[in-house]
Amino acid sequence: MLVRLSEAEVEAARMLGRKRHECSLNRKSTRGLMGEDSLDLHTVGAIGEFAVAKALNLYQGFTVNNFDGPDIEPDIQVRTTRLKGGRLIMTERDEPFQKYVLVVGEEPELDVVGWVWGFEGQEKKWLTDPKNNRPPAYFVPRDALRPIETLHAG
Image 1 (cartoon, rainbow, N blue to C red):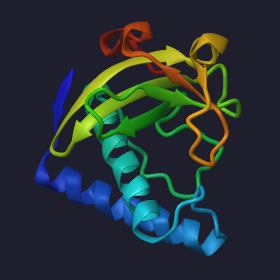
Image 2: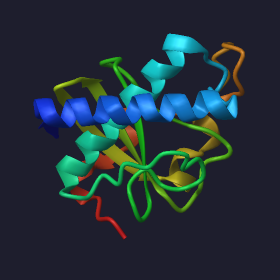
Image 3: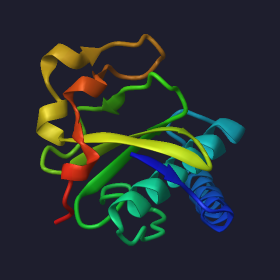
């Protein structure tokens, strides 16, 4: 589902990304990334969350320092990539009974591709070691995702 964010929504997401970046620096937690890479990671993530909230007609929530909770209440985690062929990336730490949504593209127009339950995305067949100094992760292909129209919050 293609979602077009307004200028105001993009700017609000950028502000949220900056705030998350600042808080991560204060906690000394940047997921192994420093400086602009960390800022970009937080900004892209916030923009993806805005797109999912808009697609599903849900409140975005504007959470900061919410490391263990959902991106969108009550149970939605958003994974965003600029890569057109990007896959949904999950880890061992991800909650099995939350919903994981893949968003692809760049603002203002993003593709909210689809979703899976955490336990569905954590199948051994998708476990890959990308050899990037990070732990192995599950790279869930798009054809394994449910259509976003079938996701219901709660």
